[in-house]
Image (cartoon, rainbow, N blue to C red):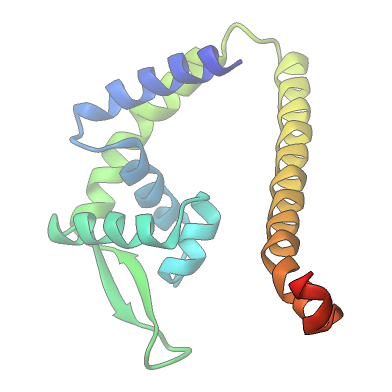
Amino acid sequence: MIRTFWTLQSKVEDSLKKHKLTLAQFDLLAMLLGLDDLNQQELAKKLAVTKGNMVGLVNRLSRRRFVKRVPSRKGRRANVIRLTATGRRLVTAALPDHLRLVKTMMSPLAGGELQNLRTLLKKLESGAEALILSRERLRAVVKSYPARLGTNLGSKEMSQ
């Protein structure tokens, strides 16, 4: 499964090189093509990257004049990320190549098989998310354990 993922991802990354885009940059530009007025935090969540990675991604695309930060209508301190005309032209030029490649990569699967694959991948994703949440809860408990000991036990018991 992992080998297949890396093979497919490598083919996608290679196809984006002619547009001088990384996969992460293309993902963000393509997402902005279909969505309006999302801030960096919302975009990070949708793309499943850290906020720090999103800041770097937006900074790089902004320097190349593909995106811009615009003050949000919801709050003066927040910015939303928007495609520039240049960014829109770039992603609309890259999108047909990308869609053709994805279609070609998925062509060995019949319609029903593709639907089964989607269902199975969603199950795996849900299981992975549950595992991550349980690990985070366990870390929180372990981290709070010394404090719990200190509050549950008197200083006499702690020194023994």
